[in-house]
Image (cartoon, rainbow, N blue to C red; front, side, top):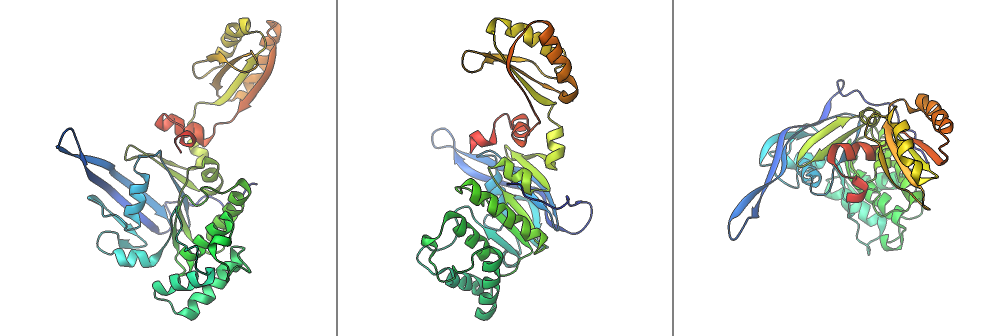
Length: 342
């Protein structure tokens, strides 16, 4: 299921709702013996998020992603640098930041024993709105998030997708314009994930919200996000639109499966004439041999390649041309696959 996402926000225009400069966090760890050493989890990042953007924040485990998110949501104090969120300083105005944002944690915040409607109202009143306002906003959110009829139900009796949408409703009940979503679709089946994507996109299109999203699903980031930030080893290593990031990868992936393994080297030589990266030769499946490389403008080059293979009498079991994906981008930037790391 695809999600229609509005055009990318131009970050050079409009107000910045998140601004960080040199934001850093170190922890005290143990070295050899009893010696203590400083562990730099976030090494001074600069972040800008404009009003109305959906920004994806990606990084391998241990890259500093969670630590950065915790600093921006005032759950952890920076040891260096500065950041303002919704116009407030995260270090000196943490209460104002918390009142201004919605935060949906990866683990969720609903009690399995409570009634869903009661959870919503209690959460709203914690933000200082009246019980009447909390109930009114809660019921409106239930309608918008396809939770009609579940006001009296306990979260433990809901499906995974329903519980996740309830978590989002709780994060929105005080009507914030900036929402942090931490791994919102983890553990959901594909249909529930696709359904939740629609609701996340609607937060921007129907409520005007700005969304800062962490995810381990690259297809999710590709479908939803105007812009992606990639963090690795505590530093931001990329910041651009999904399409622009994919264009940085050197060409389309062309993969051949050669019927006769003895002809694989010849096939690799022919493929190498149009290649932009080193040609790889290795075992494929069912006793065949795979040959692959990246080729810029592969759509224009493949026809000539096939003619050359045919003229040489090299039979193929298959040929595939695949456009670069965000997983390819992530592999280029960090040397590992985000999917495998997750």
